[in-house]
Amino acid sequence: MPAIKVLGISSSPRRDGNSDVLLREALAGAEAAGAEVEYVALRDAKIAPCVECNHCYRTGVCRVEDDYQPIFRKMIETDRLIFASPVFFMAVCAHAKALIDRCQCLWSRKYVLKQPLFPTVGRDRRALVIAVGGSRSRKMFDCIRFTMKYYLDVLDMKCAASLFVNRVDERGAVRRHPSAMSEAARLGRELADPSASPPKEPAEVELYSE
Ligand SMILES: Cc1cc2nc3c(=O)[nH]c(=O)nc-3n(C[C@H](O)[C@H](O)[C@H](O)COP(=O)(O)O)c2cc1C
Image (cartoon, rainbow, N blue to C red; front, side):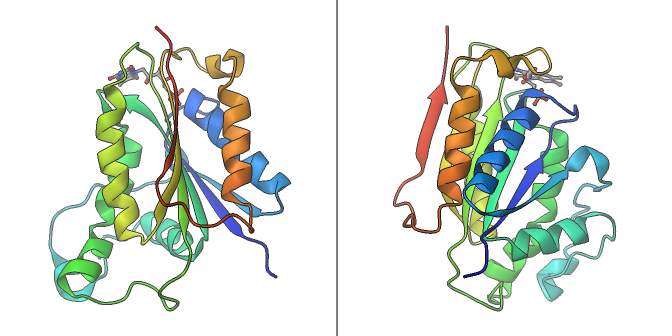
């Protein structure tokens, strides 16, 4: 059986930022479970915002050419996705949002043109969402939940799990968190486990402190 492909997308502007560290820990877990893993950092990519030209409503294709296209292909080809974002002003950060908004071409294919997205419709595609915020808030993850729900829907992916951690602010502080690192590794391993059945509901791991 070919190895399960796991794509990790890091959207934090800072390398070794907290969401980035958790993402790499989850990818290490997936790799330990036998997956073929790939890491992409959006901070190294040039992805323009959606210009709302609506070209994709007729073609299903985004005509803005930049680093979106290679990342688009990776998102389409992968079996599993791990998407990590810091919370910025109660939402995903700008790097993440630019990528997600460009997926409007997938929304158009699915809901306007009603074209199947992939050559192999019915594939078992799953995702793990990681988000980290500096404050005590728990509400800050609500917006991320909704945005990721609609993003994963256009990718024809099921959310298998999410990992939300509050009160980590300084770069890399999450390494000292009592359980976040081990939870990230565990969720990465489980995501890549070829014998695990598709989730009915996402497993929400919320590591909140006061
Ligand atoms: C522009 C900006 C906006 C932020 N907004 C929030 C926020 O709304 N709520 C919060 O709890 N933390 C907020 N933070 C703090 C970050 O979420 C926190 O530092 C997090 O650990 C960053 O993750 P990263 O290291 O993966 O980038 C903000 C930080 C920045 C730079």
